Amino acid sequence: MNIVNRIEEKKPEFRFGIASIIGGRESQQDYVYCYSGAKGDLAVVCDGMGGMEDGGKASRMVANQLGEQFVARNREVPVPEFFRTAALGINSKVSSLKSVTGRRLNTGSTLVAVTIEGGKLYWISVGDSRIYIIRNREMMQINEEHNYRLRLKEMLRDGTISRAQYEVEEKSRKAEALISYMGIPAQMLMDINQKPFDLAAGDIVLLCSDGLYKSLRDDQILALVKDNDVSLDIAADRLCSMALRYGGSGQDNTSVLLVQYGPSKEDL
Image (cartoon, rainbow, N blue to C red):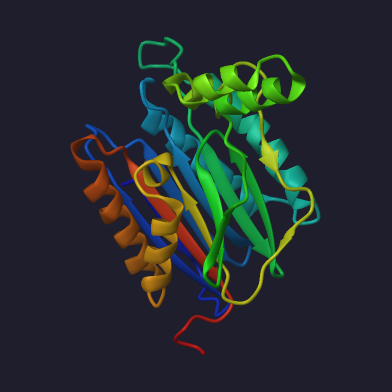
């Protein structure tokens, strides 16, 4: 099982929808964690890194460790500081993972997680999974992907490479290579918002692994959510099934976690 859904108390201001598929892969390396209770609300999606050993083990550790620390946290500590401290500690644990024979595993995981306090959204992102905000008929990505494309943008901005060089490299497979992830032995890049994002009633936060956005365009994702948002579970299922339809036999593991803040269509 790669989904942990700990809804300890029903909160009228929140609705959740979760779905995950293995796609055309031999194993499921995504892991989804959702907590809602007296300690707050936390949504997490992790994507164990393809091509690495035991990516599922890494993603499971990251999600569960963050969930456990969130529930046990000192709520007087600002959320951005909590996310940063927790991520650094978990990164060290993942980078120290070993096989049954005691050999260090070459493994890792992406991480996207959000929490909402009083209508204010905080997030942490490491790697190339995404977080979107959907408001009315508009959708925007709020985190930055940590892949080589980010380095190319920096080099273009600094004048290290020309526009022509950038355009060639940006279209190559190399541009998708991760430069930061949970478990990296080098310095880890983290995207953490210090200033909270103010949510409006009805806003939907979408967390997903790259299997979704590499198979569906943003306009397709938005349409599927808005056409099915009476039930966020149905919306999440539709997103995954359509990703599989377009991705075919080569479809990557795909996981979606939707969180709606405020009243749903049923309440209006």
